Structure formats: structure tokens, C-alpha cells
Length: 195
Ligand code: ZN
Image (cartoon, rainbow, N blue to C red; front, side):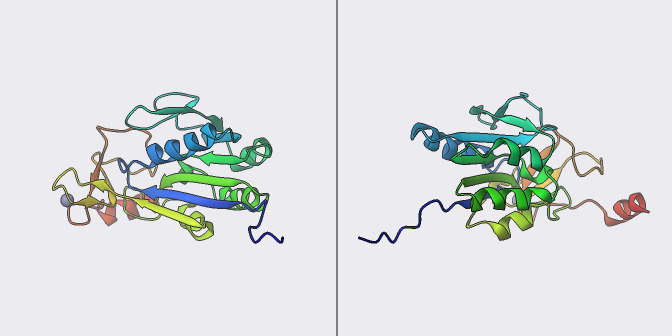
């Protein structure tokens, strides 16, 4: 009988949202299920993110899973060819090459599960995330809870005046905020810095 189920076809799942929305937790949950099923799971994260541990992905609730820190997206391609399932955390920190790399892995039959922040502290698109969501078969948007008013939170508020897009840090620097409570940094100071 002819099978109607295509074999060896991969896909991309994106888990995105603000900080404190449980993205890493959800990534770990999905990858653990694959490990339990004895699938070969490789997990990557950008080398810069060593806020808790060099070789683990750690969610805020202290779940952890072994991961491989890489300096660039092309390092993932080299190391992931044996995998059934490829996980990537903090995908917003990779450059745009991550999009073609993960597409190539999906085309090669792998399940690719990616977690990353969709917005930076200005409330604007973060790195390659929009392109990854466009490329993905499945997109899960996680919401946090606004730390001011308790409404669903879709924004990450930075509590310091620092203007770099990337500050690796956590609880004392950022808050999850809803649309009403999020205060983007003053545009003038951003323009001053750019000129
Ligand atoms: Zn709020």
C-alpha cells in the first residue's frame, strides 16, 4: 500500500515571546520528550550567553539540559548533521545566517526547535527572529505576566538606561510588561547615539 505520510521531511518550530514567558522551559520540555524517545538531540546556544552555565541551557525555574555553545550559525551546520532533533536557544543573538542554516537542517529531514526573544528592549524586532518565524512551520508565542499590573505581557522592559541592544543579565535588569505598562526608551537618546 502506498504511504501517504512523507518520510524524511523536517520542519522548524519557533518558540518566542518576551523574557519570563517560559520559552526556555518550553524548549527544554520538547527536547526532553525527544530524548525520552531515544532520538538524537543536539542543542546549541550562542557562546555569549553564559549567564548561568557555560554548557547548559537553564530556564528560570532551574531546569537544565546539556547544550553546545557556538560562535556562529555555521558551527551548528557542521555539528548537527547526525541529529534527529536540533534545538537552539537564545536564537535572537545569532546573525541572519541562522535562517538558512536551520532551513538546510529542516530540508535534510531534521526537526528543528528554536527559542528566542521576538523583541528587544525598545520593543522592536530582535535580530533574525522575524525571518525565523516566517520560515517556521509552527510558531508558539509565549506571554509572560506583567510585573506591574498582572495583564498578559508581550514586552520586555529594561530597567537601566543602558542603550546596547544586548545586555546579558536577568532579574534585576528586566521586567515583563504589558502593552499599557511598557515604556520604550526615549527615541532622541537612541538617535543621538546613532549619529
Ligand atoms: Zn501592565
